[in-house]
Length: 93
Image 1: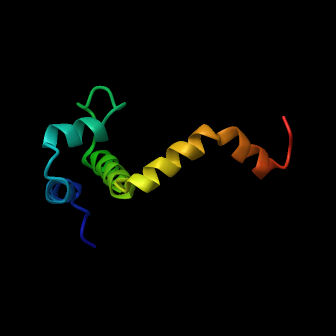
Image 2 (image 1 turned 90 degrees about the horizontal axis):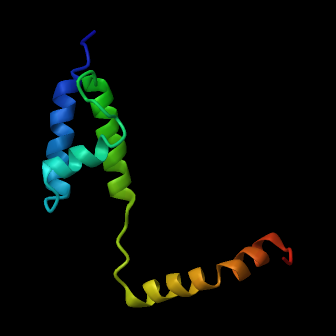
């Protein structure tokens, strides 16, 4: 059985991030993905790959809201959050 090459996979995901998000530099990708890891000296390639995959998944799920009507609705909903929560709970506060 062939051993998994995490180093190669890290390089591939960095390349994928560069292609998908060219407006972000590698430093930004690495800094954001590894935020909270502290000293990176002992981080394994496997851990690095996991952090980058998690980070990429979060980026891929982050959908920009560019429609003005949608943004206005989000703001209105936020201003009426107490009413919305009361309706969902069926309780009066």
